[in-house]
Image (cartoon, rainbow, N blue to C red):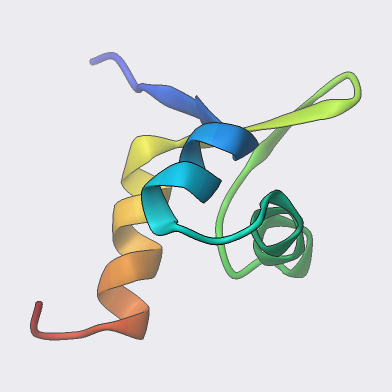
Amino acid sequence: MTTNLLTVAEIAAQMRVSKMTVYRLVQSGAMNGIRFDRSYRVPETAVQQYLQFVNPGH
C-alpha cells in the first residue's frame, strides 16, 4: 500500500487557504502530518479525513 504525501503548499492550494493555516492544522493535531527536517508532509488520507470531519455529509 502506498500513501501519497502532500506538501503544505499543495494542501493549501487544494483547500484554498494559506500555507499558515495548514501549518496550524498540523501543529494543533487537527490534521496528521509528518515532519521531515524543516518541512511537513501530510498523507492525502489525512486531508480527506479532516475535510470529512469539518464538513460531514459532503
